[in-house]
Length: 363
Image (cartoon, rainbow, N blue to C red):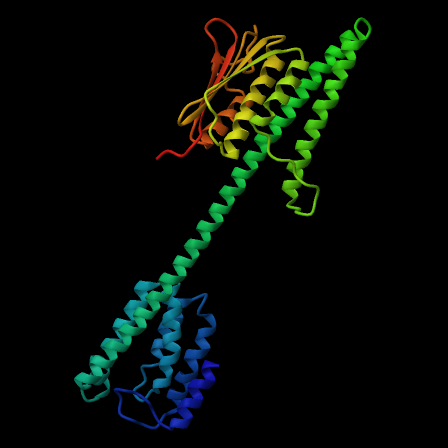
């Protein structure tokens, strides 16, 4: 297209349209140069700097048509926006020196008037400014796109981590209770069939709850709004149900609540529930038939959750500092809300998990 424009425009004008050179009829070299620039632009993306210099050279014949500058402008823009800024500015400086000083000296032109010199300087400055603005906008768009992609990957990673924690809590807690109840049912099946029946009933309740939560998570992962309705995220309103299921597994659990609960965000409800759930799971796994005390305390800024047991084994999976994957997940839940969590053996025996969860944003 540019080749057609340059050749047609020059043919219609019939002579050079050069601001500085005297008007001459075009010779064979001028017509060749008019074709060289557009043809060189075919390789502008792969070789931006060499193509730019070729297009610049096409403007140098003494009687060259001003239409040859169209190819040069395109090549300059491509090079400048492709990161070849210094080469592009060097070509502009060379062009200014050529048309103002070198061409008159070599070809015997009269020195260009001051007005033409200022006009050329302004034209070159406008071209350079437009190229820089285009380059800046392109780089900013690319940086924004990269930043958006990084943010999306980070969000997907956080979502996968959250789902992994929920799956760990749901499966770990419920499977642990089912295992305890199944063992109890087998032991009591012959001697105390009623208690064995109660254990089987507890297994049914626990497995039903686990299936409902897993179904809700899988529905969310499918992003299917027309699927079965999702159950709400568990919170402290389901704490009594959790305690009853844990007691059915043979643990003695006491609950204490101090202070008045302010309106809590759903994330705080969920984190508190999961921390208590995971702590009770660890007790059931590692502490035997222990007594557990769950304390929930509210103050103006925080909710404090403490889970103590008097078991003889490590509720954290054998680590005095609580470095198991479950405890790591609890710490991550608390940290995500701006709180903190500690876990370890108590001085008098047993294990303690203590968490602080902010109930409102810091001022």
